[in-house]
Every structure is written in structure tokens, then in C-alpha cells.
Image 1: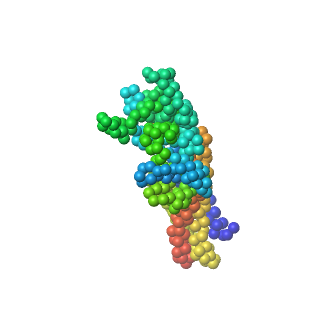
Image 2 (image 1 turned 120 degrees about the vertical axis):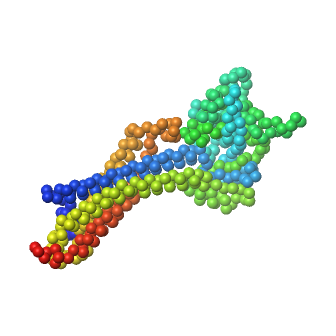
Image 3 (image 1 turned 30 degrees about the vertical axis):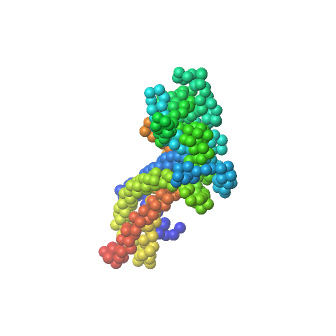
Length: 416
């Protein structure tokens, strides 16, 4: 052990006549621990929200989307097979998209109607369907509710949970789909109208989807919107969501004129940028707790310098160099940081584990899309906070160390 480290440890030990000095050092250590613990917990919770939101978005959004500036395109089987065979692509399927109005009884709801493939789709809708099955869209079903109960068979439709609640429609009830794009007749433009029967509800946990979407089988949507063999676009799921931008660039390089290729990161970039900015702001604000504790380190070490003037003078007169004297106080500040940041990191890890294990903090489901605080323990965040805290502690010890090196042995020991 080097003598600066040895003496730094001795100076931090509690002695009866230096009890106040030791108390200030303990307060500084506790402040560092609280600051590090708070930072770790907040960053883990923010990371949990971001991860949960990302998973929910990816559960309802294709990783890559191909559409046309004209609003429709042809997607022959050879094209879909070629896209599916590309490296990094796990599935490719066509979709149809249009704005419609749903009616059930006296209730109306404007939604986004999507025609999807039941098998091999790029979006895993099946795990979000409650009280029904995605395969039910392929078959016609008898109407259970309403005046047509038992006598009429209609194609199936899956409604977002909030859409079904707004319409007051349950499984087996008929709903009418009305397109604002009319059909020319001898009497003028007449809206396109088609009836479906509710076979399930979408429960993604995201209000943006549950309150604005309805799904039908792809051929039904093509006939309703009069697209023939054309579709609105192609959805692609990649092997890894994080590589969607790479796959999108490869497809864009091969796509013809008039085609647009976008990935989920580009579509939701503003949202995740806002979350990242919010996380950065929280980090900077909560870092002030560590900075306040660092001022206690400065006060502690300055008091040590004042109380140990004779010791420092004796060391310098015995040949200790300025860097050795400075090293004593830098080591002392670093030791306070190591203990405080270490305790804070362990405490933060324990609290994060408890939040994830016992879920004792409940959130109102009508305000948040989760019922409890999500926690995502990222080792990089913990290491980053620990390193920053230690750097602040070392920086706080520089001024007291500089003051110690400026002491002149002759002036201190002249009257001893």
C-alpha cells in the first residue's frame, strides 16, 4: 500500500477529538450513496417504460413497411417470396388500409380498417386477440345478437377493445362498415356499406391502437375497397428489430420508383427521441444530488488540511513531494466516493429487484398503459453512474489537495 493511500485512510478514521470531521465525512458518504441509488432507480424505471413501450409498439407495428405514393401497389407471390428470402427477414405479408366508419345500433366510431393475412403475417396479432382467434376472420359466422340472430352469416371482424366498448358491440353482434369513398350510381354517389360480425377484440394495452383499429381478412378488405389484386402495402418482420433500418435500406436500394420503404424506428423516432431526452434530463437533475454531496467532500477535506497542517509540514520536510501530499487527499476523496457509490449501487439494485419482483407500486390503469412500475436493470447504466460519481468525488478533492501542497513547512513549524 502506498503511503498516500495509507495516510488518507488514517485521516478518514474517526477519533474522539475529530468526531465532527468524521461526521461530515459520513454525511458526504451517505449523500453520494443516496444520489447514486436514486439515479440508478430512476434510470431503471425509465428504461423499463421505454422497453415496455417498445415491445407494445413492435407487437402491433411491422418492422419495415413498403407502400406506394399512389396509395396502392401489386404484391405478386414472387415478390413476397423474394422479400421473405432476404437475409434478416423472417416474414413478409401484404395489407390493406383504409379509413371507415363503424356503426352498431345508434353508435358510431371512426376507425382504421386493416385487411391482414391470417397466416404468416408480419405482425403477430394473434397474441393480442382476446375472446376469439385470428383464424376466425377467414370464415363466415352466424349473427348472435341483433335482429338477424341465427338467420344470417357474415364475415368476421376484430375490433379494438375501446372501439367495441364505444359501439357497445360484443362477440356475435353485427356491425356495419361504411366507407366515405362513395360508389357512383344513377342516383349519385352512394357510400360503400358492408356488414360484418364481431369475432374478437384487440387488447394491445395501447390506447392508440385499441381505440382506432379494426381488422378483417385481406380478401374482404380488397373487395370492400375495390382494389382488385392490389394492396395498400407490404409489412415485413425482421429477425432482429434493431436491424430493421439495415434491412429497410437494402430493400430501398432494390425498390422501384414510386415505392416508399420505412422502418419502425423512423416511424416512431420522435417518440423514442423524446423518451431519451427525458431520461437525459432526469440524469442531469438527479446528478445534482451527487454534486451537493461532493461539496461535503470539499468541506471535509479542507477541514482535514487545516487540522493536519503540522503533519503535512513534517511530511514535506522529510522529503514528501507535492504530488504525494496531493495524493493523500485525492485518495481520501476517492475512498469516500467508492464507499458511497458502492453502497448506493447495491441499494439501487436491491430496490429495482424488489420493484420487479413484488410490484408493490401500482399505477392507475386508466392513466398509464401498465399497472405497475416496469423496471429494466441495465448494467451499463449502473456502471456509468458509478464512474460519474467517482469522477465527481475525485474532482471535489482536487482543491483541498492543491491547498495542502501550498503549505510551507517553515511557516507552519516556525514556532513549534
